[in-house]
Image (cartoon, rainbow, N blue to C red):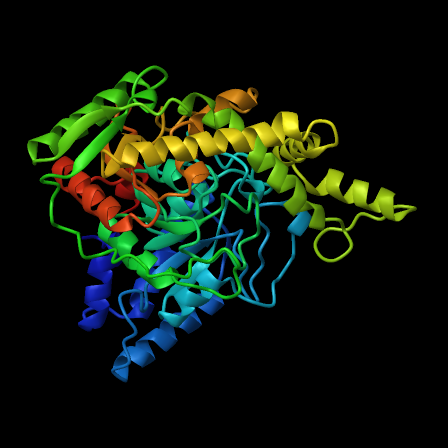
Length: 491
């Protein structure tokens, strides 16, 4: 091992607990890695050197007193810049929020701090989390450590790039239609979207409130479990926060999949999937069958319409949520002769083209005379998606598919055609519509040496089985030793 940043979260936590490594040493190694990689990756919008060093020092002092708060104590974490952080600029990747410094922490961020985690900084993202490549960031795109001429995915592309490069041990992302799982897939990482409501959305700058969910991006399934255990829990500040008993995420790790019923979604594992991705996916399914899993093909007919429904529901909700950015209360203000002119100028100058496109689409879908024809119909399709998942889970324990229909693509190759960009999320959007958990696990490289992800989906609150299958996928594909070329070159 050339640097402590190349340890897994579990490995680093053990070294910190046993006194073989200090939080300050781990943080300085993390900051050194950022110095070596940020010029090429632009994974971060803000690196909080002062705050992170203070947190690392406090973590070491607590450990010295015997006050070790758990496996995230002293661990460097990146936070996607659409989660508010007290005293640290939060922009959501948009010029309309340039310079905004929140007075409070998002609940998930507060949970990290309480666990002793060291927040390195705020990671780059597509503006307001709207995109699949990080090319829509108002501050320039992030790059993929596996090939810096290609995208890291989105919208949590900065979080994925940071973890893959070693400038964070783990990261928080948000997933509205695949924005944790897809960049994890493209960067060779584990990315997990929990059941809707399992992690508080309080302090997450909303894109689409019925779809958004915070989750971890990590190097291993175990590291993702560890992070979820810290950030999950009921929050009275979030009206959609789950109030019941929480799943035991860790109990099933290492149990294998003997007798587990796994359904391969036929609509997401055939036409439209790149041959390299499909081959690796089928090989992983065969490996699961060899270890005792019961494999069957499952049809979800509504998948044909899920993408269209999503791109009406999400823009409609974003149209409502982004109405608050008007130049009056916070963020950018461009003066005008009237309030209406000021608001129009502020929004025209502050929002990028993709955000403007979605706001306009959503506003149209909600307008008088079109509401039922567009938004109302989309919600009916969402109901069909939920019903298809419910029927499927009566016969299988989990559903699987490729995470992304292709591996990382070159910068600019899809920006001219929004529809081709939207199709990147075709495999991940359905579980957001249905509200269940999903996880991406890296399984192989394509012929261009780019990572391929394997997606596991489960019923709401099915995290225990989800992690059980994901851990077995991780074991049978033996991915863990692979690192991006950029990391190899900088180590």
